Amino acid sequence: MKGESLTLTCTIAIAVFLITLSSTLSFCLALHETPQVEPAIFQVTDENLIPNIPTLNRKFSRNFIHKEFQVFIEKYDKKYSTKEEHMHRLGIFAKNLARAAEHQALDPTAVHGVTQFSDLSEEEFERLYTGVKGGAAAAPRLFDGVGSEAEKLEVDGLPESFDWREKGAVTEVKTQGACGSCWAFSTTGVIEGANFIATGKLLNLSEQQLVDCDHMCDTREKSACDDGCGGGLMTNAYKYLIEAGGLEEESTYPYTGKRDECKFKPDKVAVKVVNFTNIPIDENQVAANLVLRGPLAIGLNAVFMQTYIGGVSCPLICGKRWLNHGVLLVGYGAKGFSILRLGNQPYWIIKNSWGKRWGENGYYRLCRGHGMCGMNTMVSAVATQVY
Image (cartoon, rainbow, N blue to C red):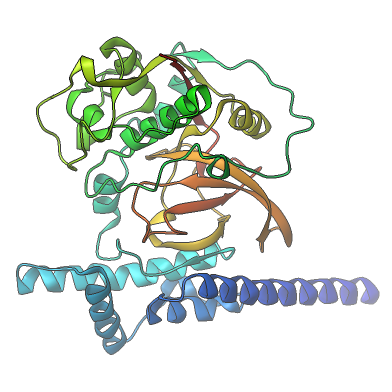
């Protein structure tokens, strides 16, 4: 018994040491990759280098909060019209410092801290910067009579890592602004990739056409209708584009970040969507379809993304059923270190639509193989017509 107890004690000690060491290395790497990270990141992250600290109720001094809020305002050029608004945002900023510390404790593989969204409440962030409709009910509907389901593909022999950016199939990171139009950016991204594979040409397609003109509703949930900055679904958008006859380029129908009257011109169509396919939730099938079909439109739970700075996100807790954000899956890697799994773990490469100042130059890495944050639940691909 004494020997077993000693062995257990040694095992725990080794695990704690490895977690602490790997956290330190991960944090240092993230700092090296993001040299302009403000001091608040260091303060929030430092204590999380040591396991078992009480970060969930972290308190920051008033002076520290005021100082870092001023840094935040200057870095992101924030302007508040009244003193009351300034104080209101300061209060939210203070809460988000604590949230970043909590996220760091729950997701130690990544680095969390102050972002351009740190003066927004959770509700404001979700309303203004996400936009997938349907919540918990959206994912099952996509596999229930909407579109076609992809045939099972062979997964043996898949490359260890893969990235459509390296092959020229992905446009530059875009910015949706304070508009819940992520679904439109996810839609254009998957069509841009499919068209590149079909034609060899990478076109920058119009999100604004979808924001202004697409009012398509889900066949099984009439409340899940595409509604410009009010949210939508990628599969709804595919159906709209099939009926409308196609999608214009960004140059002929530029993005404004707000909904306006529809100005779609059929003679300006650059790409026609022929059909779309839903991908099974098996992540090996997701990888196989990614390699075969091109970048994939996915929905996920964005709860950890408000505070994400960089690294491979692999949170202890992230709901897989409440999907609220549409993004683009562009690749995967094999060797992202995961503290939670004590070793190198594969990860997904995800293109976001919050500009290059967010995350890793606009990208998000999420650990692969665990259905993390529901990323495998709402996955789709499209086929385009060559003409």
